[in-house]
Length: 199
Ligand SMILES: [Zn+2]
Image (cartoon, rainbow, N blue to C red):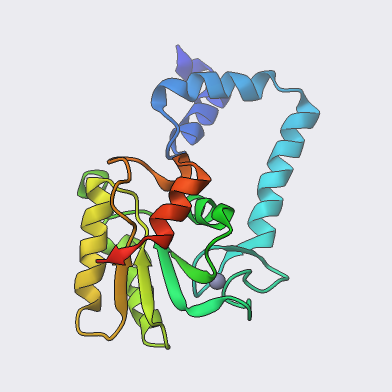
């Protein structure tokens, strides 16, 4: 039946390509867009295109930056450029920034190694992190989520940095297992970071 509605089929197929969107929600999301008033839908598309045009990933830390401005972190003279906090995504970076207690810089990996989801080390920015360490970095804080994939990724990074003089640390113990930084309250993240321990 649905092949007689080619436009709807096309919309559904495109929504299917959005990661993190559960397949059972695709019909609901499609309805949401179809029922949206045209002006709002156009505005929505415009914002996506504008974001794509005006935002790029910093080539050093891989967080987002406005094209016409320097990276908020890598170009900040007041931040300690020798301490690099490694996070999975931009969301965890924000969780750490929100504590107001971190003055180093970041490295956004773009995810974690997950063979089940087809993500391997080459899909992440691990190689770039290893290169970055050679430019005066003294401490790497592995602030990945406390999941099996997060821990395996931390171990992989540590193996890649073996033999360098950089100090490796990780978040304090006592964080709920399986929890993600962005879901934790500000104080918990702050404590986890300030009471960090050697990896
Ligand atoms: Zn940067």
